[in-house]
Picture 1 (cartoon, protein in one colour):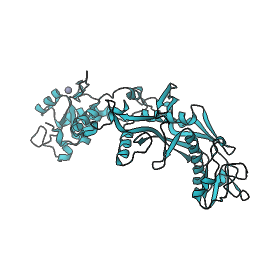
Picture 2 (cartoon, rainbow, N blue to C red):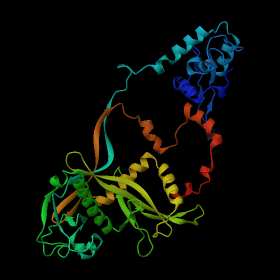
Picture 3 (cartoon, rainbow, N blue to C red):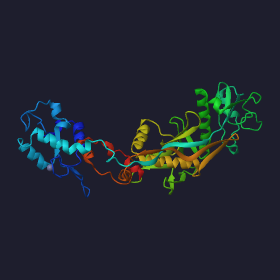
Picture 4 (cartoon, protein in one colour):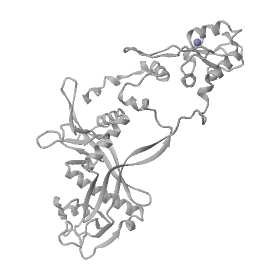
Length: 425
Ligand SMILES: [Zn+2]
């Protein structure tokens, strides 16, 4: 008799993994796991029998194995209830050698590496990343000494004209760097710099040092930041992400976008967290995104897009404290792959306004973000359609998940009491 408790989980899993869900007794077609139906869970009916018994007194008990060896997958055979009884009652017929051979024959097909003949045909597919293609970058950077007494005072000298397009600069080593032509007497920096001491740098020159490359990327990030603010987004400095805010009248902006299959969708980007009965939880969810340009080795950049959440206590003021991190982390931990991909799709549509590309004109130069995720073509065995379909429906139980469920059913903590699941509503 095999007692479950003595056999380590790892060995149980190894055993079930090569069982093919069938009793190992030659010719038996009894399944080891009965699927559930009409809401009832599935049932594991398979039993683990020791080939050399767990104790010296048991059937086939006089082998020379240590306790660990007795409870290893190599010494276990998975049988239906009936065959478990039969082999244990007739140890002279079902000897160690007979059972070992039965096990070997039964498991061989599941242990074998796929051969040419049995390997699944390979398919060619495109894997998409969360990186947007950046097809054009400003190539000229100008720098000049700024006239303000300190870097903090520089912003006050800049003419922030919305009609001008993105206005972005950084200050380093008592100089102001920008994509604009700093010599211009009518540009946004006319009052900010010494226009007689302007130096021109190419992107390539600037990026030839790691410091210079960071400055260049910072200028790109600030250019994008200007654009996102013009869309009504704010920047959460502490968490490094942009988020939507409520309109003046207290309503949520509603963003239209296309799903990845091209369907017209629309989404409230600020939502009050409510319980099932409609009462407020006292905080608000804001769609948010972490965006940053990443320099590529060699030349060029990509824009990394990471969907996030931002929490406020009234739709405006950031909620703070340890609960926030916990809530956001838990919410993110419940985002399935499909939702994450939807999030990336949403943001690429927001950034490009659903057009093929977003062209930001900055100081007469162009920063162009394509509505296209960086991807690569791969040739691989592929994921079967029934796996892809899991996102749409409940995941069917399999042997290992049932075993896990048996083990962990008692460990379920207050996970489902948490006031979380219903705010999706
Ligand atoms: Zn059987």
